[in-house]
Length: 71
Image (cartoon, rainbow, N blue to C red; front, side, top):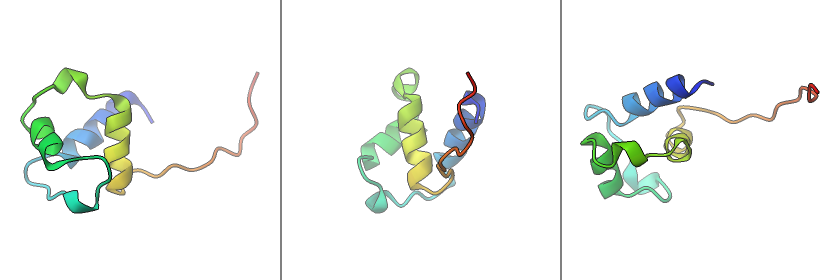
């Protein structure tokens, strides 16, 4: 998955029209969601934070790569 796709999914997830079950999220507060939605600290949101939110919301899935390393 590309960084652009992660950013797109993240923006869609935090859209004000989307309801986020904050009580079911681990390590993500209501204040953090509010700040993300309102563009506060927008430059300091890491890819890890974005992936964490998307994973907890079920927007992405992590699967083991069964392909051998290509060296």
